[in-house]
Image (tube, rainbow, N blue to C red; front, side, top):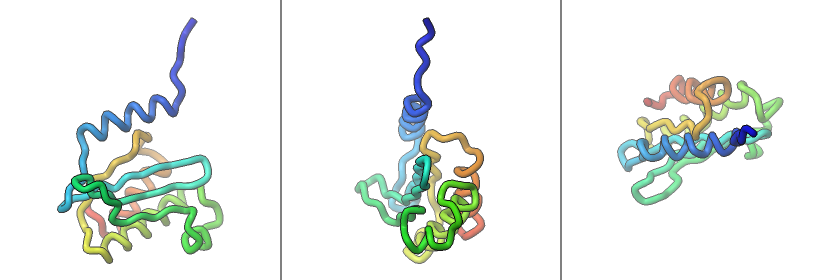
Length: 122
């Protein structure tokens, strides 16, 4: 009998492999992405002290009011621009991208591309 791991277990294992190689510093914090079935979350984290410097999510009222749906590629792109604008306001212009174990495609790629277009470098 074949014992197949769930997608969630595979994603978490990939995420820990990525986290062993990627760490956010004060000069270059980590842009972490989490995707649920209904929403997307993005945080910019300084791992040296364990602080979240900037965050944005489609759960927030001001962001979800601009969106028709909160779980599609357009929502991810809008979230990317919002997180980039908030980061630049705080003086953060360079980050390390942490895709959270997700495949760099679709929503995750849209968020990353929108953040780059809005001024973040990674």
